[in-house]
Structure formats: structure tokens, C-alpha cells
Length: 165
Image 1 (cartoon, rainbow, N blue to C red):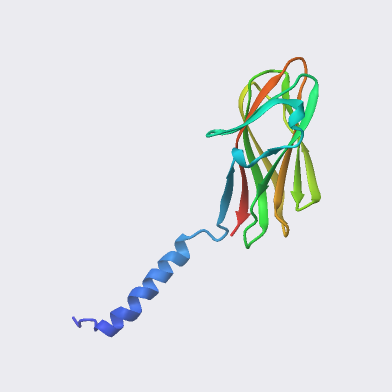
Image 2: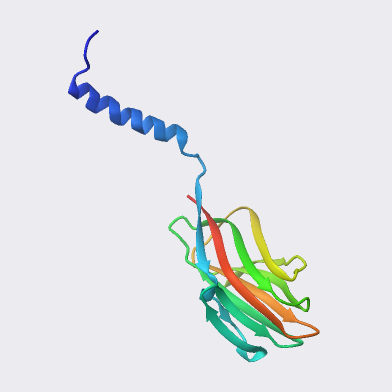
């Protein structure tokens, strides 16, 4: 049996490595860009009993019978193609509710989505765009919150976007 020369090995080894990677990496790989809840901004702090930036996220208590908007910005990558947005939040009272989510490309509102019924405790919402939307000015995610019946404490721990690679 004939031995392979070092020159032949130097050519074959990289080709085998590239071939292996070519067939094992998903064709439509994507990635999440995640922002901690403390990156949020409460639009009307006067409608709250206080806004606190904690290690676990943005915490605020919405006053009885008031509404508010909470805004988050997610940096847009070089790709700019976003498939979905994910938000994780906590509500301590049945009177606290997330009414809707608004998605922005810079200052232009692209989509408004009614939120599902808010349960007491931790909730997650994933807004799927049904395809990729192209963002050129940065992704903004806004939540419309309300408290009816009693004050309600909210914690937003995570806001993320799924980008196409």
C-alpha cells in the first residue's frame, strides 16, 4: 500500500474539514439578539409608584386605573432580517395586564399585536412575523400596560429578536 505524501495530506485534510462543515451546519441558521429587561424605559413614570432597575430586570408598579408604555431597543445586526420577537415578563396581580405590543423600525410602527390574556406570574410572548422583516433603523419593541382594580407590579426580564444569519 502506498503512503500518502505530506503535500497530499495538506490538501485533503482541509477539504475534508470544509466538506464536513458544509454538510453539518444548517442551511438557514439564525441567532438571537437578547437584551436584558433593564434596557427598558417607562414612558410615563408618573403613572407608576416607582421604576427600579434590578439585577433580574426592569421592575415597576403601575398605579390603579392608569396605562403606560414601556419601550425597548434591540440592536439591529448587519443582517437586519428579523423573524420574531420574544418577551418574558412577570405580573403580580390579576388587575395588571399587557394590552398590546408594538414593533418599530426606528420611528416607523410596523406591527401592533394584541397580547394574550395575562396570567399572574411569569409570562412569555413570542411575536412571529410569518417571514423575515428587514429592519434598517433599529428594532423597537413597546408594551402597553394597564392596571385596573388595584396597583400591579410588572417585571420585564428579557426582550429578544431572532435574526436570519
